[in-house]
Image (cartoon, rainbow, N blue to C red; front, top):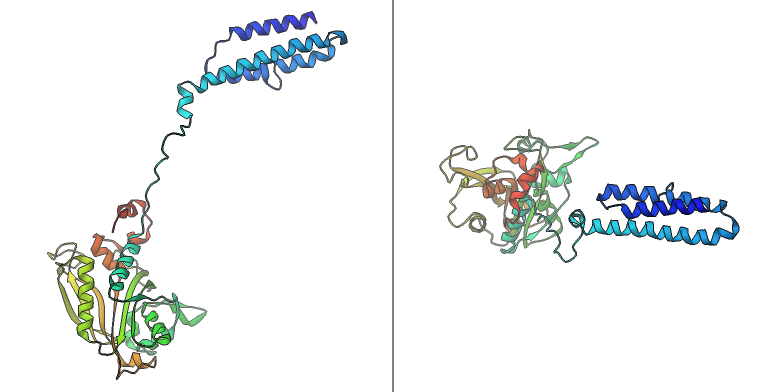
Length: 343
């Protein structure tokens, strides 16, 4: 008993002489005095060797020593928490929260939404359809029967297990499905992704996005088509945009025309995007072919209509001066961050 009391007294003096100094020293102190193999544990184990009549007195001394050791540990730990190191890791609940980085829509989405908004002001509603399409809705119903040479204009991805099915090559298939279910008047735009078997380059990709429009009603004329498209390009690119129409051929429209605007990248002076002509073709258009109307039971003697189609990537390229179509699908954060806050 006397020997244990002397040891405890020595440990008390040792604790009293310790000067708190860093987290490492604090942990070493905890292990030495309060750890599972520490001094406190070994002193408690000596209780069995103390005579019965002295156990109570020894227990009191042992509890006092334990309280001293634990008190020293807590004071030491608290002093570290109030120091410079502790403040660096402390959480100040009175501070405002961290600002999260602002995300943005993809540039293709931004331009698509703007196109939808512009035509929405003219009364066009949005129509959608499947990306896996059948031959009838993608080709035949659009006046491209089997073996028609116009099919060679589009390199198509056919589904091997079912050759009659394919990845749609244009969103004109949505126009076909709409005319199949709805009678005139029809006024729709059809934004969506399309697929063609083309070599990927700065100017082409195996998938891209289109917006096609269709208006069918009584007394619809080519003048209506031109004024609709004039309104669109001025709203998209500004009132100073220059426009020209060139005769063209599309199997589902007659007459047909391609629409060019002066290059927004070089201002018309000539660059690689406009092939140094100063003009960029942005869409194809024309009056809906009577045969296409008749394919869906619409009286071509009573109704006429116009249709147009544009690549969203091309519009986006001219609006934001992007010179490589591959940037749209590479998910490069540096590229995408440029459109934060874009309108």
